[in-house]
Length: 257
Image (cartoon, rainbow, N blue to C red; front, top):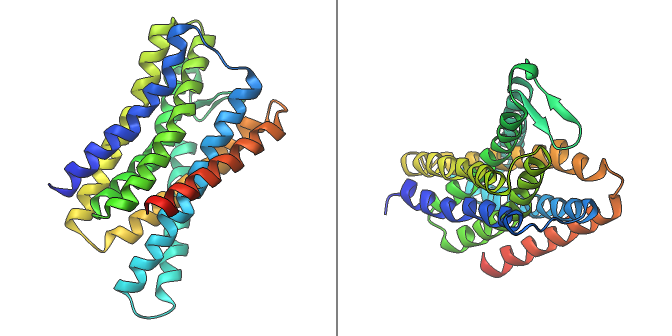
């Protein structure tokens, strides 16, 4: 199977977990504000562990295989991580979007409905996740792919729930909130297919792709998720969620990868 097709299929599964997370709004279940922050903290912990153990460490190993000089692999790691963070920061600055708590951000936010601001925000978050899963899947390591796809799928559950609840609070019906939240996960297969295609056509890209994805994910965690979970005063619950997410992803990565 072509690397891009493998990546597409895997990211369809991980991205589809966003719909699973949004499904409770269809039966009227809504977690408390405190529990929502704990779930988002869990997502941040999963992403943080995935960035280091599923992306940065394998990328360093690949770079060491490709380049024998001792200084080149860590230099590539530094450059890739910073490049990923700068790219997502540039998108975050240039594209209008809205945060769950602190509101609208970016140029000309008044011209775009709040609904689309929410969708754009989640799309920005999902780009590096899809790339990370797709690049790993395209690299052909089945165990590593299972680990990171499982981890990203797990963190998509609370993310999908948060989007659905936010839309519900804006007055949208449960079905429409679910449908839109589920669609926000659709960018992951697109990113996955792009990442898989690059890997299939340029093997040198694999460590760079992993590192850029890691940098983007770490930036999202620091700039978006953690501030959102701490803004309403539920610091302890959010921090516990983050630690649980981190150790769950660590366990999955060591066990499966």
